[in-house]
Amino acid sequence: MIPYINIHTHHLSKDNGVFLFNNRFGFDKEQYFEKYFSVGIHPWDADLQISILELEKIIQHSNCLAIGECGLDKLIDIDLELQKRIFISQLDLAVKYQKPMIIHCVKAFDELIEICQSYHLKIPLIIHGFNKSQQLLQQLINKGFYISLHHSVFDKVDYDFFNIPLEKIFLETDNNESILIEDVYEKAAVCFQIQEDDLKEKIYTNFTALFNTHGR
Image (cartoon, rainbow, N blue to C red; front, side, top):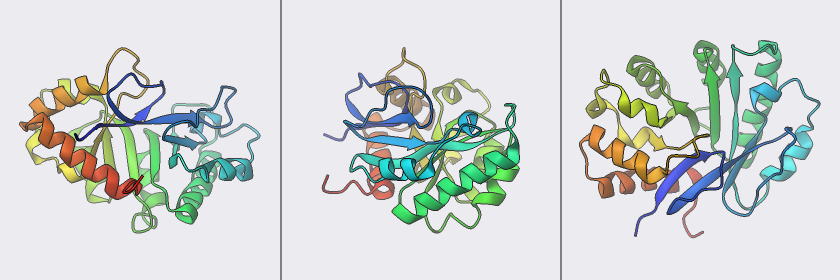
């Protein structure tokens, strides 16, 4: 049976499927490595004294499937140039270890697109928690990004889901403890006008292709 894929969660999942638990490296909380996980320096932590070498050791763990979340955020009081440097250092690690990057971006998409333009052919770049306009979504897909949709997107009435390419899409629960990934798939299948099993198969195909999980 094809599993549900939860590409990004901050909570140990109760779901019947595969999840990537996000470890926020450099933040004072317990790290979790027992199942698939991602790890990265969040832009909110960009001004902490963080060792990239220590991060690199964790990235080499067999259960680490991705780097992130990391990225750019213009709503925080941390110098954007510092955020860019920390982000680029992690992009370079992602290239070195051939791992996808899970990206946090708030009001900095122009800067993000510029930084990432030379990385798209080297590693998969996934914008997580996306709930902005469909115009921006299409722009990001055209630039080479993958999109992990926030569950709130499926409540929007102005989205034409039929024109969103499923081979570029993932789903997630992010920081919401009260929703299961099964619930997100159910809502998404209705919006995409597709059978839920077919949606599971398409996203599972995306997952195995990008995250190199064949044979695991």
